Amino acid sequence: MANDPLDFPDFDQLRERWQRFRRTTGGGAGPTPTPPGTPQPPWAGSRRLAPILLLLLAGWLAFASFYTVQPEERAIVLRLGRYRGAENDAGPGLHFKLPLLDRVFKVPVERQLKQEYGFRTQTQAGPSSFRTVEEEATMLTGDENVAIVEWVVQYRIADPYRYLFRVRNVEQAFRDLSEAVMRQVVGDRTVNEVVTIGRVEIERDTELLLQELCDQYETGIKVEEVLLQSNNPPEPVKPSFNDVNQAEQDRNKLINEAQAAYNRVIPRADGEARQAIEQAEGYALDRVNRAQGDATRFDALFTEYRKAPEITRKRLYLESMARLLPAVGRKVVVGEDVEGMIPMLSMETSPRAGAAAATQPGGGS
Image (tube, rainbow, N blue to C red; front, side):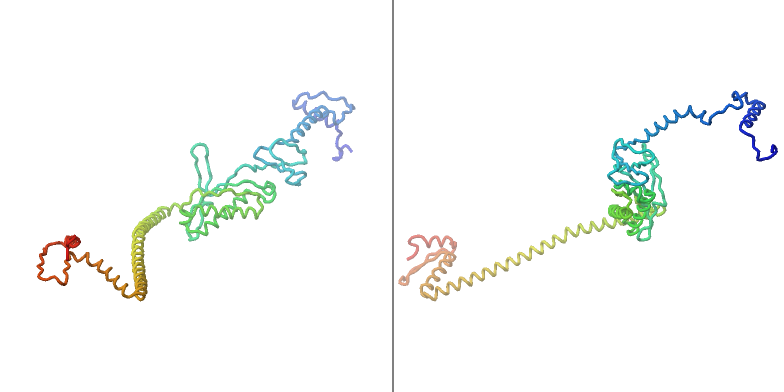
């Protein structure tokens, strides 16, 4: 059985062959061979390492039993892979966990995060430099033009559990949602609105739609602000686009000047026409009121005349003479029985002087 290939030598034979081989090849004398027949237990070499291993294990358990949560973070603890509820979440400070049973995920819930779209910030120390990402920034507008849109989304993690476990690769999903919403909003507007006057409206609509999608997909993200960095046409068409904008500005300037002239002339003409109409209406009202007053006075006078005709006739006569005689001038009253009277009157006497002479004593007989 010595030549049987399955007849393996025992351990002592293998050890003797190995020592003989080392001596032959110059590998040193090696350890002092153990006398044949002396038994050695298999744990004789590891007995010295046991205290060291136990000490290392105890240190690792002590280190793995505690964890620290920063002031801006919140810790989600899973025990045996199961979430035990929000009441077991850990706030800032030092906390205990069960090694090998608890798994801790720290989420920065108080930190404002941001994502850049259409560009990337390369250096922040000193003068900032940016790199445009054309595949993100190039968008098609509603009037079938192309615009370069760059924007920033600022957000916070409102629900750490949903952020960690409801959506796989939530950061990439959020980027895809933001880009899809921005392309939808830009696609509903013309290139002039995107580049010039529609920035505030685009930011507001994008923020609202993006928040709706984040709530629908349960990402646990609260969108705080959407900021457009720069909206420009592509470089090849930028000169033509600037010429169009300049022409529109000139047109608006002329329209504003014409509107200003219109506002100066038309309101004044309207005011003058309204003033003339009001004056005519006032004059008509005055004439009507005067006529009505005269008619009312005549009716009253006629009523009194019918009561005493002679007295009323004499009163009217005296009132008429009182109004007419002062305007006649100098008056001479001659009795019916006077004969041979020669009037000596000056033809140059003014009416006022004649009236004064007529009122003097002896001015007439």
